[in-house]
Image 1 (tube, helix red, strand yellow):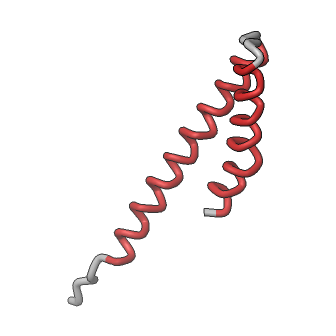
Image 2: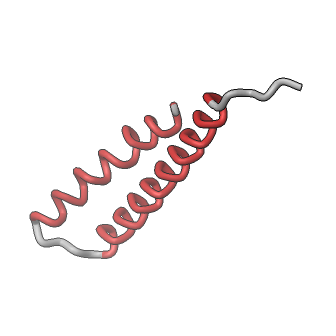
Image 3: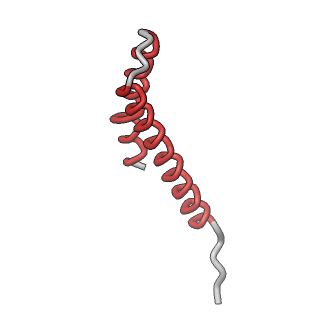
Length: 67
């Protein structure tokens, strides 16, 4: 979870603000697309990590069978 939070704070939010400023200025240059690719990769990483977290949480809450 800390990685998910740091990813959002250090990559996703600054990238969104940068892309918003570039788009409002109409500057769709190489740096815009590089940052957008980085943002998509970071977002996909967050989704993957959240999926793993959900899976682990479900396994932990599953009742254990006693032998």
